[in-house]
Image 1 (tube, rainbow, N blue to C red):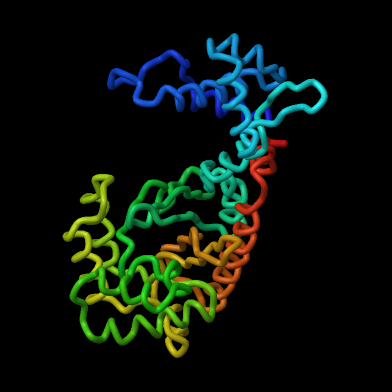
Image 2: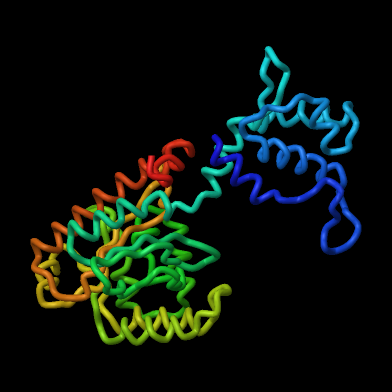
Length: 321
């Protein structure tokens, strides 16, 4: 809990009397609540009495009592029944768990996966309509072909492992977002999503159109929401390439260089919140593809359990015990 308090202190480094940059403070009561939380965060090893809090923040005892009562009801602070002193409560840890980037929790397991399959790997999540690579690892000094920070539009054919488990309406919206695509792709993509859900992972063929579209999308990326040009590039890839592999085509994997083998990471409610991708960028035998697929699925299952752990366990792991 000490780490949590220090982090809260860093994020809430304000003074009760300090006004915002825009001028007059628009909500002094909110400012006082923030100041109480910050004060307790600065004193992680010294619970404070109501009188001390009121004195340090220059607020009345009645105001301090009202704030602490509400914070206590929400679990933001706890009151020692014997001493009557206050400290930060367990709800702060839960808040940090939600704010803590999942990539930090998965970094060490991701490094282990890279070494075990001898190829780069990455994890991605959906942000503002884009698939964002949040972390990537490669063995040795080499950089992953798809490094952290890369953004791709979340529309067909990208992000299949995110939508294979989605509702029919969500899958349709994902395809429609790409705009006009040929009938062959529209007829195929439903079968592809069904196959990904059956085997547990998706496969991206490494083709010249993919490399060109990938290069163009990286050049266009300005950190904002996807634009119509990005959508048309995604549709062009759908038109120009054969997406993934259906059951009868799996033997073709040996004749194609593969870009990624990706599996979804689920939260405790069964929603896909991230994906993990191996990045072979070379040809693999069919047994190798199946082996890598099984390993990324295994990683995804373990990752889903890991990101659901209590925040305190996350912090202990991140800090090395």
